Length: 401
Image (cartoon, rainbow, N blue to C red; front, top):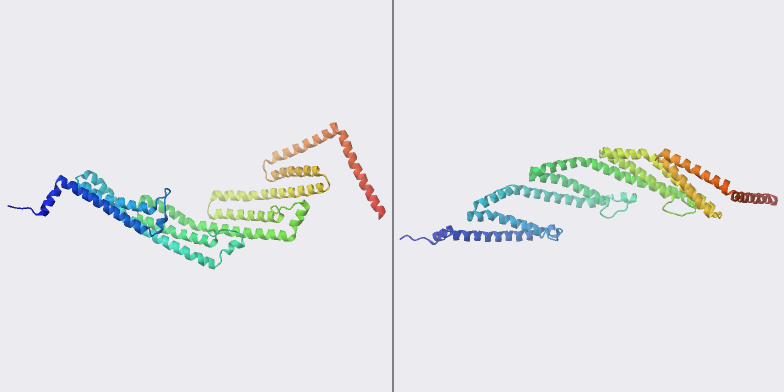
């Protein structure tokens, strides 16, 4: 009589429906265990990197998300086998197809990650080495000489090092996208990065123009300010106007004005270096309009100066009301002159100014000619009396001499 070996009996048992179910359960348990072990090992390894400090908006660590993703991928590897064991090929076939598609890109993804990791490492190393070298050459003194106050991150050495860091990363990212070889993503991304990379020389030229312009504007503005301060014009103007406002001192206003004008010139030139036609046209229009704006500003300064001098003179002679009236009258006339210099509705402004003068003259004539004859008579008599007193004093002084 033929007897079956224990191995044959176990094999036949797993061919039965009950054995198939048990085999599927065993595969499921193995899948859970292997996926869990892979997750723990990966999280343990990543906890020693900088990713351990990264968190999302909900406070979940990045390494935990990566570990769960790896756990899911490993578990999915066992899923087709479990379904095939149960004879459910219609379910396992699409899963196998999906996994095959994913596995095709895994080497590319790993290669892209390696390229990025090496690139970031090199870029960071160059950045860390470049900062002390630039500090050794004392490039940050240029900012101090130009009067620019910044924090540590804004120092010129750190800025240059960061720019070099980005310039190194751009070709690295392009190389990683080539390795990834997902054409739907890589082709437009590489085209965009290539445009940016080709545009970098223009950006650098524009930055150099702006930095040089800013430094030169600061230098020239400071020189003009100090020359005016050294000449004593600030004190003379303050004495004439009777005010001491450091913010509106002649030296400071002149220096800042020159500084702003020079910066505008260099900014427009940087637009030209960037080949930005629209902004260049706008900048040239601003430069063409600048003489009108500058003349209007000079009129404004002159009005403030004249109003201050007149107000001080009348106030010192015990005429505060007349001082206030003259100040505002000068401001009104100055406003019309400024609008005229700016060419803002020039004809309308001229007409309004003429109408205002005529209205003021008519009102003055009517008030003195009709209802204020007695008042006008008294005022003129008062002025005549003052003139007679002054003439008498002059005659007396001459007789004493």
